Length: 216
Image (cartoon, rainbow, N blue to C red; front, side, top):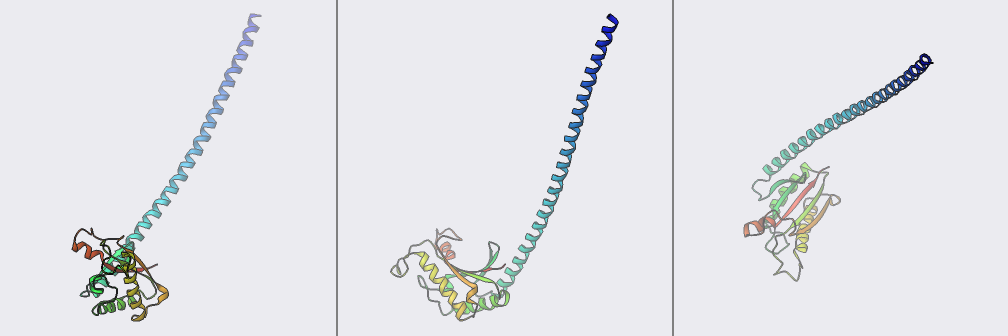
């Protein structure tokens, strides 16, 4: 009986060991499957990252090319407008022709000075040559001083800036024959200053009309 009992114990022990071994083997197989899946996921993520990085580099190159193009256009325009009192800058990714109010209007007025037409005429020629089909926004800007002498006509700087932009818009249509369907205006009043408004020189910079070319 002892011998048989020992065999039985060995048999069951072998079964237990075999069962444990099979369980461990299944566990290892499952871990291998999970690891393989994770490796595949990581490889896929890596491919996606490489793709996104390539797109990012391509976008950087495109943006740099566009920046260089705008700067060349700005320099060309500014060179041709030299001597008019007008400057050209890049604003929010667009060409903007800046006309100080001092060359366009008398203080608090919205009627163009006689000498203003000379500068505007040259601006028109450049716009028609360089941007014949682009939409153009004419912006009026003022300093922060409240309206005093013409308070009965212009309640705030908003009205004054909008009226000045309108005056320039009509000149572009009536004298330069730009397409009115491609033009619109905005009066920003004192709310988009380019200088501090703390002194006369700064306030003078803020009083301006900008002609912004909205290229596609």
